[in-house]
Image (cartoon, rainbow, N blue to C red):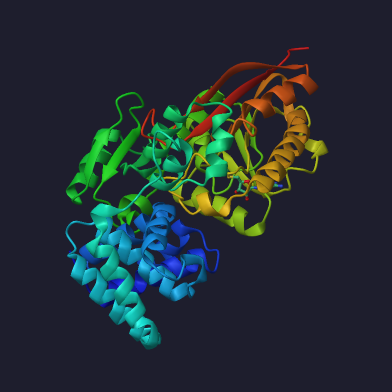
Length: 436
Ligand SMILES: C[S@@+](CC[C@H](N)C(=O)[O-])C[C@H]1O[C@@H](n2cnc3c(N)ncnc32)[C@H](O)[C@@H]1O
């Protein structure tokens, strides 16, 4: 395990980008790893592990720091706060790093960043925590279960209260623990170009550990990945990085040859590309998104995967497209949502999302569904999906939609929880329009 100052400096840059500048964690980490491609693999995994871990466990880390520091975390300067948080993560969760190394490197980094006057404070707090790691007082699980879960799983209490409407605290504990569990990366094999077995062999030859999913044979679970975007198999469009639960959307669509599919919020295009490939070049997939930049991401994926039956368009899904009315066999409505199902990959959502924002998202989802359902042909279907586990955005939206659009009926509805398949939390509803 490396303990170079440089790696910790990059961790600090990532943590500041996420917590101070509002950059998404996966973007901040990928920006640093792309910029510093020359770093040794070991150093790259150290950076990823400490940044992701610190963000995943931030509420717990702050709780610990506040127990041992005279200055509370929210009163600290951002640089100092981030240095202390990541050092406490190392001390508590990385046995391979000696506690003294975490303290010393944190003190050096504070000095290097121009906070020499606070280096004594950093040193004092970290040594105090280091000495007392086995004496941390957590909320009592029996007397204050919700607070206990919030601290130990680093989930804001309001989120637990929201989930409590549908799940017991015991079930929520399993969900919250699943978000903290490391899972392999999942990719979807492009069956139009290669078999899963041959792709698996090629990736194994690059030093990765690969397994084919037991239920969905074109899904491969990969470990030991450093930078997938740099390998030829990626450039050749032989796979798409996609979660298992997200692959189920194209499966639920049950497309048949020559179908017309409109994906109304489709960037970067994972589900559309999957559907276009299932159509084996027949039919038409029209994939839309709201901004020019997002459409450019769809176009890039169309090029890389060389799909010929898919086009990208810039269109605001809230605006009715008269030309599309009654034209689609399938409408894919994979809508913007709170993302509470993907906290494993995007832990910063836990701290960014607020109850008021969920309310606005529900209103946006209803506005979009009220518009895009018109594109479904009689007898056709609309797939409504989200990557959240919030019933308000999922089952309650489906109930609201079918109450207001009696011509649609629910054919299937599934809430996938993150502890079930080792996948993201995801919601998929298939709504069939009457054949009038
Ligand atoms: C969950 S993502 C879609 C992911 C995509 N289905 C895939 O598999 O790659 C939701 C998308 O909705 C887009 N979006 C948000 N508001 C929109 C609007 N008013 N009209 C169209 N797209 C919108 C976002 O830009 C984002 O790309």
